[in-house]
Image (cartoon, rainbow, N blue to C red):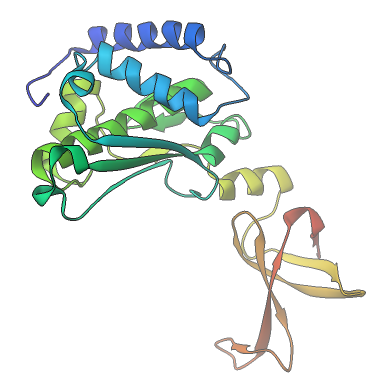
Length: 246
């Protein structure tokens, strides 16, 4: 696998072949901007990548196990690959990998109107985003098998993912939960807001936005103290429950 190297046109053609076969084999994914996906679709995708990009190396040689999952917990990373720290000492049949793909980044893909990138390559659709993230995670698996460690910031990983998939960066610029929520609700950290809780109105400011907003409210009995010595209480509030307090 380490000797595989494709030029950009071949990579493009192979991706198109994978798309066509995925549309045929998947129950859920029939268009580039699909709205439903299941774990089984990731297994189909892995089989296609192994066959079309990796000359069926995993099918013919890998004796371990690869678990593929969609994750609602991943909010910053679009994908994640884990294996045992003792992989170097393990028998081939005992090696296990777990690859997680963020559902959040797939669901939020079209919620913000801007260009998205993965690995320095433009992702024009939800499926493009999925495939490019998947390629990144496949390279982590390959690097773990060869070197028993993996880091996308290291030269070995960058060379590997460029040679096989043409990626020129190791990061993504997809739409995360924070960016999607800020766009949908029109709120940002620092904004003054108000909300109802336990029958009363609270006034405060947004400290952070993720799946919910972290709102700090001035409170004489609060456990948090700001730089001016004022006490605050922290609340985790759904963004749809907030109103701007101008």
